[in-house]
Image (cartoon, rainbow, N blue to C red; front, top):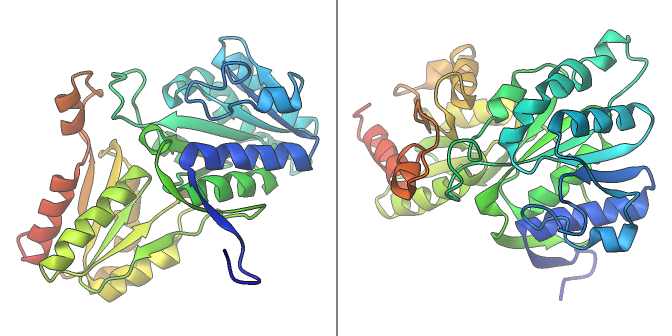
Length: 336
């Protein structure tokens, strides 16, 4: 039982936390509608929406045709008319078919119309590798959308943030893109009951440390924390930052950490080239934090290859715990 004045928390899965956020939003605000392929009776490709169609009906939990471009366009149009749509792509990869609506419409209309309208659409993207779904169903494309002015892009790594960031996204007047790693849906953690919002654009320090900073996103946060435990036994104290939001990026938290530790490793699943780690590295290089670095920055990202179907090859093309551990040890020993 929680102490008086302390919000009740329960252990929920990542998927359950997202569903709870949508349930709260649907109950509180009649403008909120869910849209996407097979999110109704089927409950969603990853069973996140569950039985919400039975609770709120087919006018608010809407199965869209197999047309990502069409569905995304309807969601953007609905937001322009005053609704608060949450649009789910079955797989983040399928958003490539809807980039015109996301990049040319949702992201730009507020600017092009001089602020006369806003586009409060939330889009959910089940992303990442590890499920054996092969090259067209396993990508991490968050950096694509992070490149676009007018969009906000977040990557929750915990059930608590999965709920809190979705509720924050619904309160935001601009389009918010939420990338949910598919391997996290069954992960569990403590989640506050009721409504709360996790600030968009604010990173979380998951572990404090003095010897190096590991900035990670999404599922890589969990891997970085495992690495930090191993390093602790070896006398190496790693700070782990969960970026949470890649547009906007929490510049202050990252730079302050690098000034303290003097070392930086960036870990992300998307392809290394032109990825999130490149932006973080440039941000440090262009600031006074650069003067505090005691070794070169290390980026660990995805390989220059489509995600293979073979499970061993699939693991090999994205950073794993041994890769992060090796990089951290080499950095601590002055080998990079």
